[in-house]
Image (cartoon, rainbow, N blue to C red; front, side):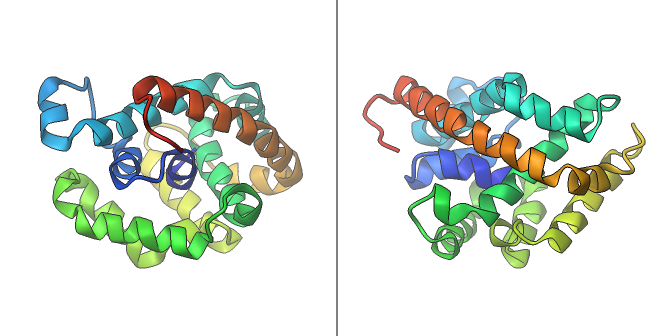
Length: 204
């Protein structure tokens, strides 16, 4: 999952949501200094993000989606499944989440603006672009998704030929969507369990 999926599965509390956003941007071990700087609930959100990523990498439905894109570039195809699953999240949001996506997205963008000082400096331009382009709602749009995929391909192209990923996605669109709908309830259950382990008094 990418940003939208992680946010959707995280508790609604601001600190958890912020930790969910930071999950890919806080590198290495989480230390006592990390917790003192960011706070316990932001760190819990980061831990949830990391555990969800590790769990998803082993989930049958997620693996099936990655293999549908390409078996030869499997390690990289998982990165694109994260983005494609956010597409399905955004497209089918009303079936999966009680809050309107517009309201949810605007709340996230306000959280980013308010807490920009807590974001790693190198990540700030990325989050600024997320707010400016309204990524969370636009993931549902295939033209915008294609632009996003092309950005990722360009970033990764030095290490591997990634051409054809989006075309493979379109060819396998319905099959990957079925994978997603099988994946989501399992991911939701894992997230609830993990939140309970990280913070027994927190509700999702």
